[in-house]
Amino acid sequence: MATEAQIRNWLERSIEAIAAERPQLRIDSIGERALCFRLGLHLSGLVLENLIVDSEYNFDLSGPDSKRVPNIGRLAELARTQTNNTLRLVIPDLILHRRTEIQTDNEAVIEVKMSDAADLDAQFAREKVIAIRSRYGYVHAIVVTLPRDAVNFARNCRIEFIPIT
Image (cartoon, rainbow, N blue to C red):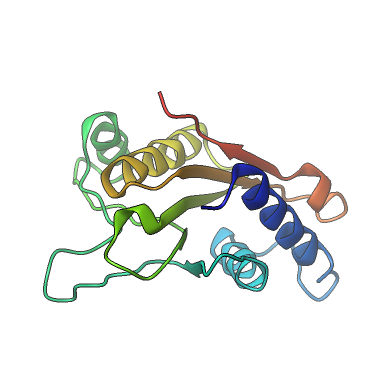
């Protein structure tokens, strides 16, 4: 099992690798999805313990979607607010796991947000990783906040491990 310190180290090193891509990578003007992809790409080269970085993984294509959660509790209220009262399923940005059907192989669910995201989006990211951790047995629920400031990018990133309550 990967520890919080190991995962934090992998994330910090991945963030530093993104920062090193400047000036070709225009951190201050590209979208969250592109930066999330770069984070996952760099992260996949660092993780150990037979772990895989995926954006989603469904081991049973004939069954219900894996690594998705229906809107529950406060998450449903947030989703309604964001989608004009239409409930929707949520999918994590990144997952760190072993590709098996065993829930104990689910290490971390990661949501990436930009520092200029609306407060509701940041709250939704936290609710999302908490719900996915709870439903699928992930050890760690993490929100990574990336700044728009390319010059101090690595120093101003925030990695938040959401405690189990």
